[in-house]
Every structure is written in structure tokens, then in C-alpha cells.
Length: 256
Length: 253
Ligand SMILES: Nc1ncnc2c1ncn2[C@@H]1O[C@H](COP(=O)(O)OP(=O)(O)O)[C@@H](O)[C@H]1O
Ligand SMILES: [Mg+2]
Image (tube, each protein chain N blue to C red):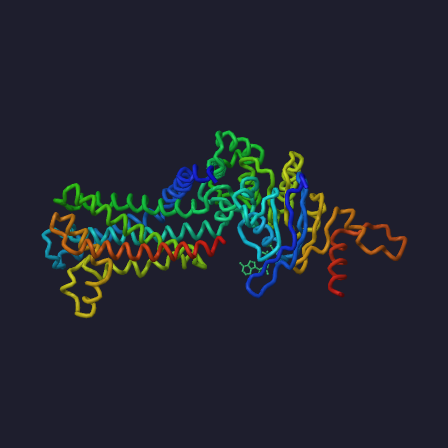
């Protein structure tokens, strides 16, 4: 109906405003999604950094992309959590029996995920600047970095939607993020893959997070990016499409 | 059938092997309070979900305000409001924020004014700025009801509105339901409590083993009760006795 179409975006805005309130009122979320990655960054730079042969003259520059991905991966577990809680508490049923578009609540969560992760990424970059992070990237490279990170967030968000909708318990809703959280550790995020044993290295070099880390790092360093960016985009887009289709199926099944 | 708010005919619904509804029929008049009485697991919530467009029936017809729930769900949603079995409130927001959110989603011109009025009416003004997670069960239920009333729906579904509430909170909810009906709102409520149906409803339907086994006003239902054999007993049958008698009769067949 026309009225429903007309209000679609403002309704999503209402749901978005609400879940942003949830985030700012939950110390736990803020700590996990920004303070923990920052602590990691401090630990790696000031404790382990001296021993790591990264090849970069400034380890913060080397480390930052991986830290950002870890922040995003822990951020989306809260997306799944919030979705699960809304479903469990009956908010889905309340909204679905009202004259608003059915997908409003889902898109509200997706938008919240994008914006809240963008905020934590910006905060972490600011802290990195204090720690000596420097970039010679131009505006276009920064835009490309923003684009890749947004796409990565969106991809993980739709995976989070699947997890949140199909979970049976609160813990189940966020458990899916642990393997994702682990991927940056088995990539070039902290140390160059050259130093790894062949089998581990083969995995590290060819998993999705590695290409994203490498692409973002090259862009920030103002270097030529090469194929990494296309591989990174292909991974993200491919997983995004599959996750979206699957999430929508789960959703249709849940709300039929 | 100008004044029929809900019409249900031959409604069937199974969850896989489990046949929950086996041909349910009833009608609800506009402006009345209709109680669907049934024990736990009888299928009350299933009926509410079908009528509020959350679940599709397997067969049979259900119409709300003369719109078929399966064919015209958007039209049905325009005029109804659901208060589910468990309070659907946002724990992290305050009571006021919950109501304002509903006002915005109902696209009211004055969500704040409506919110203040409802807070006042439901005795929540003092707690309005507190997070709902600090509310008692009764306050939560009141907020839940208030949220359902934002936008003045013509027909409101209350699924076990007083289950889990203490007697005082229960009486408050009853008062609200009566006020709603006095204001012309049609109320469809489900309950396990015979007393609740007796107190509130203009008509009572008893759901048992997937069918409506009795449907009528309280006095009509009382007539169904087998006449007492011993003349000098003056006590009127309670609805509980009526219920047990009818259920017993069905099971003998
Ligand atoms: N989604 C579902 N899947 C399978 N069985 C269900 C589902 N929902 C309800 N049931 C079963 O259907 C029966 C009726 O449930 P319900 O309508 O919730 O009853 P009531 O509200 O009267 O307690 C119960 O036995 C319940 O376990
Ligand atoms: Mg129920």
C-alpha cells in the first residue's frame, strides 16, 4: 500500500534510532567493539611489536587494517544478538502486525550495524593516529578503504542476520562470530605470511580476510594495490549475495 | 453482516504432525468483548496469530473487518493491534521512549502528546523516564497495553493479558479492558482463567481439542450445564464447572 511505501525510510529511521540508543546505553557493547580492539593494538604495538618483523618501518601502519577487521567482526556479533532479542521478546510480532513494511525491522538492524561499525572504525583510527599511524593515502584511496570496509561490514551483517534469526539461544546468536574473529590472526594482519609454515601459509594467503587486509594496507600506504582489491571485492560480494539470499529465506520462513 | 468484526469458518492449522485447529468457527461482533477460553496448548495463540496476519492457516476462512487475513493482510493490519502473550516492550528504552517509538511507527502527528496521555492513563508517568528493565511485571504489562493503544486501533487482540500477573495487577488490566470496550473498541482476548472470561466477556467461546465446543453468553453457557438433580442445591454453576461438564461430555463420545 502507498502509505506503507511512503513511510518506509522514516520507519527504518525510527528503528535505527532505537538500536543506536541500545548501543550507547550498553557499556558492554562499547567495550567489546572499540576498547578491546584498541587494547589489542596497544598490546601488539608496544609489547609484541618490537619482536615482529613486519617489513614496515612503523608497525602501527602495518597492524591497523587487521585491527579494524577484528573490530568489525566483533561488532556484528552484537547485530545478531540484538536481532535475536527482538525476535525472542516479541517485537517482531508486534511490528509485523502493524501497518508498516515487514522488512523495516531487518533493515533497521542492518543500518545500525553499518553506522555503529563505522563509528568504531573511526574511533580506532583516531587512536592509531595518536600511536603514530601515518598515511600517505589520497582522498580516492581513503574512499576506497571506506568502501571496502563498508562492504565487509555489510557482508558480515547479513551473516549475522542469519545467525540472529536462526539461533536458539543468546549465546548461539553471537557464537558464529568467533571463527570470523579468528580469521585475521591466520592472515597477514599481524605478521607477514612468509614466516608461517607452508600449510598454514597456504590457508592464510588464500582466505578472504587476507586479501582485504592487504588491499586496505596498500591503499593506506599509498602503494599500488594490485589484484588484492579485486580479490577482496570478489570475496565480499560473493559471500554477501549468498548470505543475503540465505538470510531472506530464513526470514521468510520465520515470518510466514 | 455490517457489524461483524471477526469471522472465522472451518479454520484448520497443523504444525507438522500436530493438528492444533480442526475446524474452528466463530464470529465476533463489533464493539464487544469476546473471550476465547482454553487450557494451555489448546491453540489460542495459534488463532490469534492467524487473525493478526502473523501465521497462515492451512485451510478455512478468517476475516477481520471483512478483509480476508490471508488475501488482504495489509488491510487487516490497518485496523488491529496485538498485545502478545509475552510483553513486547523494549527493555533498554524508557517507558516514554517505547510509546514515542510506537507513535512514530503509527505515523501520528503528535506522538509526544499521545504518549503523555497514555502514560497518565496507565499510571506510568512517574516511571516514564526509567528503563523498562526496572519495571515490575504489572507495569510492563500496562506499558505493553498502552503501546498497543497508540493510534486508537478499532480492534485489539489480547493474548492471555493477565497470565503471570498478581491479583492486583490483574484487576487493573481488567479495568483497562472494560474501559476500552466502553469506548467502542472491539476486544478479542484469550485466557485460561474462567473467572476472567466471566468478568469481562460479552461472549465466551471454549476451545478444546481443536474446535469450539461451546460459544455463547455466560447465561447461555450456564443453560448448557446439566440441571442439578437435587432440587435444594441453590448454588449457581461456576464457569469452571460448566467447562468441565462440557469437556467431559465431549470426551465420553
Ligand atoms: N511453531 C510451532 N511449532 C510446533 N508446534 C507448535 C508451534 N507453535 C505452537 N505449537 C504447538 O501447538 C499447540 C497449540 O499452541 P498455542 O496456540 O500456543 O496454544 P495456547 O496459546 O492455547 O497455549 C501446542 O501444543 C504447541 O506446543
Ligand atoms: Mg498461548
